[in-house]
Amino acid sequence: MAYGSVLADVVQSSVTGTPPQFNDGAGTQTGTLCRAWVNFNGTLSSPITPRASFNVNSVTKNATGDYTLNFTNALTDANYSVAGLTIGNTVGNTTRTVIIAGVEATGANLKSTTQLRIQTGQTTATVLADMAEINISIFR
Image 1: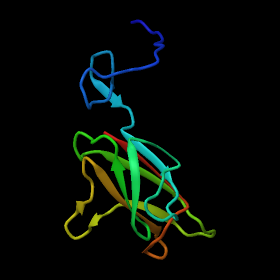
Image 2 (image 1 turned 60 degrees about the vertical axis):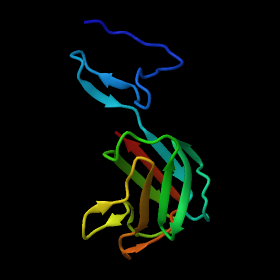
Image 3 (image 1 turned 90 degrees about the horizontal axis):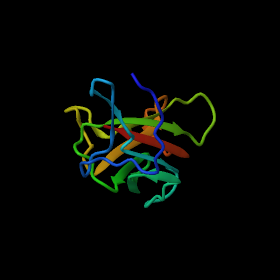
């Protein structure tokens, strides 16, 4: 078994629209890179310019605590994982949350290959609220 280093300026997949993947010694896929991420201020008016991002070209504020992230390059399908973190603009013991927007009664969510709709809020008040910093990462 050989171990070593790879030094490269660019790693490119051989398939258009598919990120490079990581395989173990048996050739089994063990992971891929982050498909999209964004850091933005949710207290601003729409359209929101992200502080920093990858594969997110814009953020639309639909209403208080309700945002749509628009992808620069479409994802292969909507079966991706979303991780989120918010930092609120108030102090105290308020629990903050970020969720994928959807219809609770049917379980339908608002994820597609070209955009993702999220909502942020304060769980102790059960209301949507703008957050001073919203961080979203998308993996597939």
